[in-house]
Length: 424
Image 1 (cartoon, rainbow, N blue to C red):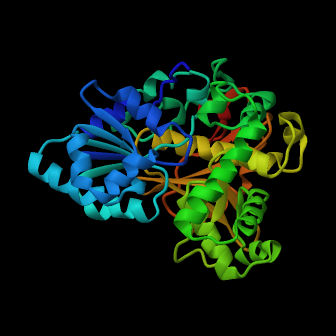
Image 2: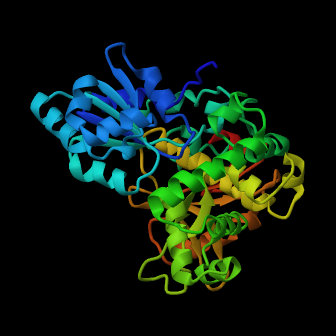
């Protein structure tokens, strides 16, 4: 199968030269091992702890294991042998050389915490997600964004996103960037796992069914001590039906027929295992009426669509959840853009008791940028009527954006620019 370029490659290599060890973590099946193996030089050995014989050796005699697989080494699924970590620490401390140990791990549970604790200051921990749309379709990022190490994505990475965006109307969007309804929902429905995007696995439903079974058996039961897989799966489906909505633990617990503490635990498991992301609400001492609950997004829209049983891109695009899925898609694409630059974004959303809501807020350099995400192609000023709520509670409100399916980049007002979702 042909290798698909990941936009993180250059930054990964830069970081690996600055630390003795590197840990690439993230959901299962997103290409962590494929990426690192592609970047390996011939002298770096590769070993996977999915092999039960090698896993036993690593756990029972870690010193002998590391004699057999000397540094520089790539150790796959490090969470299965935390006993290796003290020995790896001794090796990197003794050698005093960077770029010695590469590791992958699928869950930041107990063993991932062990990596942070055992190798504090010695390991760079980087998250990898499934393909972005641009990776999936082999598209370049705009040339202005290629100097990734010194720029913050989205609002500062390109002149199009700058506060002083051109006031000209009907600025053309390149054809490979302009998304249509059919384009975006085909991607949303299929998802962004590499094996589906490359055609290595053609049966989408079979893939997601197997993925969930593996996730429940290997991650949830083994690492999170969730006893009833059936109850957890029911909770997972209920969460999928509420993607892009603020979390209401009482309703989740009631619908799943579990207690509120159990619902809170299950939600934490979903976030720790990279199935969902919880975006906090934006509030300060002047936002007394703001809703404090976080908003929930699924990290793969294809998995979410499978769990909610949409049978095709067409039914999803015309269904009752189409707006929520589009918002989920835009959020995750923005998240991946930051992650591929090894940045940790400050994402928030706003909602108050007067039902004023702003889909997404990005905070950068003390300035907040409101973003409205709309499944439409004809921009309306009413879409951003709630942006004014921020100006009543915050002084540093910067340029705002509407992300939609408009075929043009246009100013909606002096402080708001309309973008096609394909640009991000």
